[in-house]
Image (cartoon, rainbow, N blue to C red; front, side):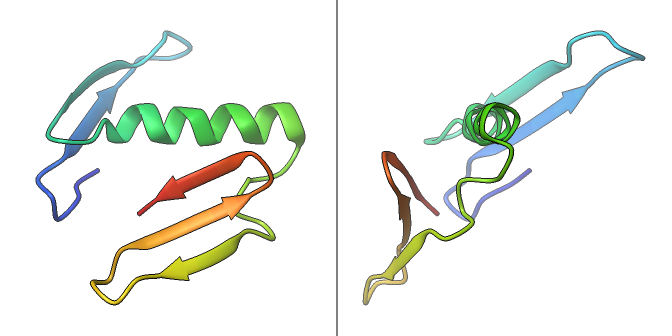
Length: 72
């Protein structure tokens, strides 16, 4: 994964082993993805479903639903 702010993440895995993750930059992209995945597995749906979206004049995008929130 890559983001315009310079953040990136790469993961590799074999069979059912946990992935080996490398990430760098101002944001931890893999950690964010893993938080969303955990929410999905725990709640049976993605947190973005039904989320409110706020787009600022500078293009920053925010999502929020209940206690969950994310900045894109």
